[in-house]
Amino acid sequence: MPQKILVVDDDKEITRLIEYDLQEEGFSVQTAMTARATLQMVSESRFDMVILDLKLPDQDGREVLRELKQNPDTSFIPILVLSARAGEADRVVCFELGCDDYVVKPFNHRELALRTKAILRRLNPPLDTAGVMTFADLVLDTTRRQIILSGKVLSLTPIEYRLLVFLARRKRVVQSRDILIREVWRQNPNDVENRLVDTHIRRLRKKLGHMDFIIRTRHKKKEERRLRLEGGGQNIKDDDDAICGYFFDPPEEGLVGYSREPVEADEDYENSTDEDSPITEAQYRQ
Image (cartoon, rainbow, N blue to C red; front, side, top):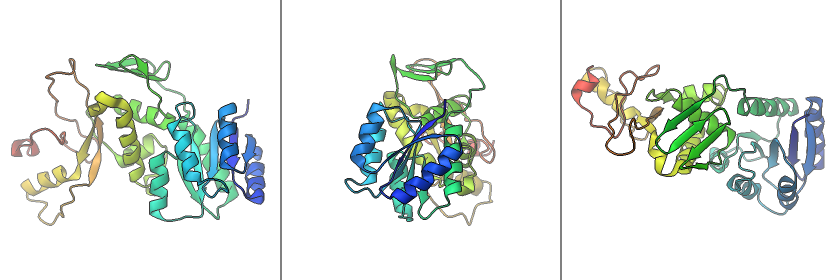
């Protein structure tokens, strides 16, 4: 059965061209021209993906994006945004709202079809391992593709699910944003903004509730301090907000009184440590 895509744009010519290209790739395509029609169609039928123009006659497309991502029944649907707005701020807003890709008009229709295929491919890959991982109140059931918090199944997007499972399978190993973009998003880090990772981490932590501490941040300033202590970082400029990467740091025994082990490094992050743990000169000289 072909995957079904909803194309939303009030420009009939653009819609017709996109529909043709997607059908050539084997997709089933339906179209909508207004925000109202979009929300109604998504509520009545299952779509594998939505291609959403931001400039709609009855409502800002960003509000449609917000509604779709805040609704548990539709939050998992990947959304590719079309927009004539090329500014970084516009992109960031849409990524924060939950879009999976952002394409600026005018665009190559063939490229749009390929981007659509790439999104669906990376968000619905076959799992290479199965099983259940339990961390206190958090259960990752990769057999059923469910994340359970305190007995309740969380509503995660496909990319949030992949991100959490990827980090959990490499607990206490710092994963740089470049690594996450390559391995979770399956994209070239040079083609994707780092803020995309930060935005998804922030949203994922919010959904994890009282277990949000399980995903931790490694900041660049600690790596810079280590270099200074070793005499190699005299000219390094401070940037307290710079992020080296993220890591999964579960409690070993319950939630109370557990101690964090040193974080195993990944790639350039040798002897990385949790940003909330005491840091000594000896740790940096190990």
